[in-house]
Image: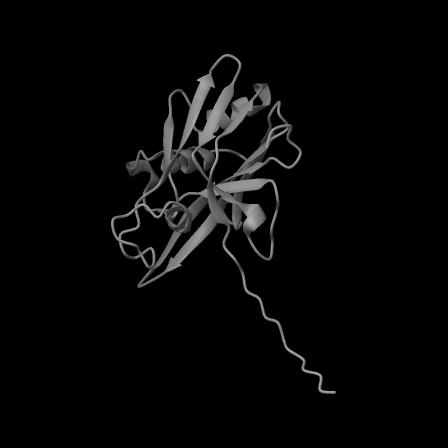
Length: 193
């Protein structure tokens, strides 16, 4: 009898993009809306990896793309305040389903991230830039840490909505410091998934 042993190797897997509308409500969500100065819809451009995952989901170009260097379309999420008085907010249409990632899969968790935010924040009115510029003035901001800001809010539906800002460094021809913002929604304890 011959026994053959094989070594199984595994690698990391980026989460799948999904189209999902997450609606949160309740007074405890108000601070999240205030972070974005949310009065009307806000369009948030997705980061490069997130946008590529959305392309893989939709496959919506005239010619099939082989990677994100060949004209991958920009993608945006929208934050919409549906009811200012009672705070009902909708975030859609694209999320990364963290239940499909590997090795750290988290069923019921969704997220999306900003592009790398760099340069002079005062000169750009993009919503991500405005958010980071405002957060830098808060006492919770930790400029020297890798996680520079972290704040979570629990909706009436028991959805935990978090905003995190991470230090990002680009080591191309010159070192450029920047930030990446991630928004995460934990629906694992929610009444509506």
